[in-house]
Length: 371
Image 1 (tube, one colour):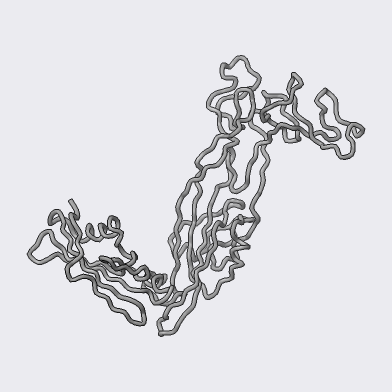
Image 2 (image 1 turned 120 degrees about the horizontal axis):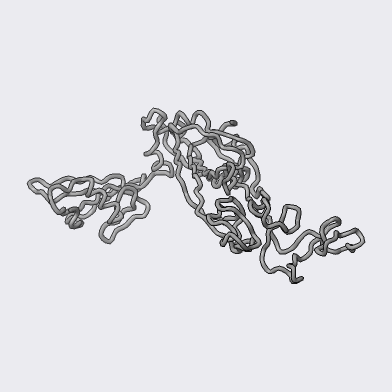
């Protein structure tokens, strides 16, 4: 049940050209399968199937105009017919960059407005998934797998490094689809300095912040506090526009859009920690400075280290050969020797911050406040 056919009508499309651009009226004859098919199905068909829905550019027969866009679709059932409809599409050329945005502007009370600075703005919140490496996870099976022999010991369901049964780090690591909350907002401002992008984009919040009151009242979102290092600004962009205001005057403005992504800090037992990079301490080499173990039961002394000598040495196995796989380190630059202890089971991790910090309190418009 639905649309059977769409035919361009015999009278063809009409056009009016003036100083504001072009206006078109494009008639179609539509045949539907039965009388129960109504206007909604026809409008959806023009948009979803034909690609001639609202905001599509004008094309009809051999004519097309990529600068004139569909403003309306008007289906009317023919008299004394159950299955035939006359459908008229109307197109126009925007007179300026802001006209199409202006058609969607609503003030905080929901009324249409022609004033760019009365527009309440837009807000969207969604979830997107990204693939990230996993250096910390829960082992469902206990090590050793036969519960009797083996070097590496770890009870089941212990949050710790991702290793094989010998306690050697997996390389490459496991990966997981990690959810990021994506907050996108747009507002009109009188002027905009692109420096906002440099001082905010790719930055993370240096202190706890929360939604500003205007955002709560304007969009009915629930208040929440973003702990430091959990909020990252990923996009700041401005689009200049001009519109005819309520008094017929020309008003210039900037539509500034921003995107923020949220990664939660880790409560106890969570493998992830906001926008900090938590890296498992592992390696093929060990520290070889004064006081460090020398691998033969002793320690390096100042006389053992010559000027220009690197303060690192290869990690070697009991047979004296250099290890060929990443092994767990103890946080002091040395390999873990007790593979039954707590550090071997839970791992030693170093946290890194790779993004610069920002307060997000001096944005082009108010989104957050100090918590």
